[in-house]
Image 1 (cartoon, helix red, strand yellow):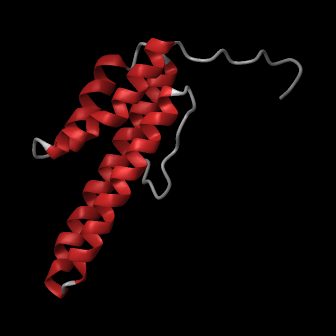
Image 2 (spheres, helix red, strand yellow; image 1 turned 60 degrees about the horizontal axis):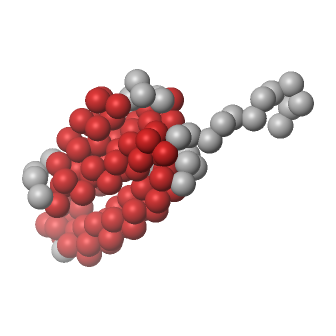
Length: 122
């Protein structure tokens, strides 16, 4: 850290909570078709102006869910050669674990970046 830079204050509890909701909104996909995309999109669009931390975590959550959706389409296509069934299962478990980790980190005020994520939204 440069001595001319002031330390960045930790996000408030409200900001951290909304950042966490951006990640956990993906679990709407367990209830509604495409809920994993719509949940983070709606929360991010409503709360992105609250704080830059919420904006960044909302984009990260949405980018990850877009990546997961595209990977799921590939897995479904690979079901024609049987391997897609196992890959889709692994994808689901991986997305679940990474989403939980991201939500916990966001609630702790730490910016989380998903691994293996195609970042369409900058």
